[in-house]
Length: 77
Image 1: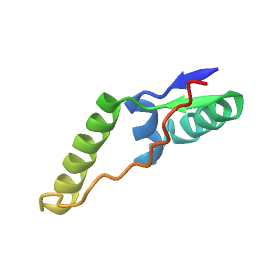
Image 2: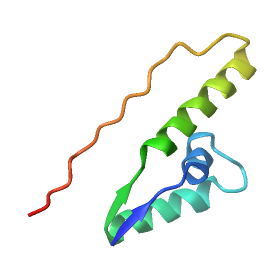
Image 3: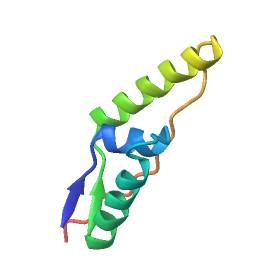
């Protein structure tokens, strides 16, 4: 099975949301155990944009970091 992960689930984990972080992490782990996980480009863009806003809000400075993801191409054999 292939599971697409939404930005809200990833942000729960990345931002350590008090209400949903544990539930979202558990859901990701279960999905990973049952098959493959995919994260589309739109989700990556949403997360990066949100992280920049959170950083600027908490520090007062613009975010100057980078977003690096490791992707493994799928095999169609």
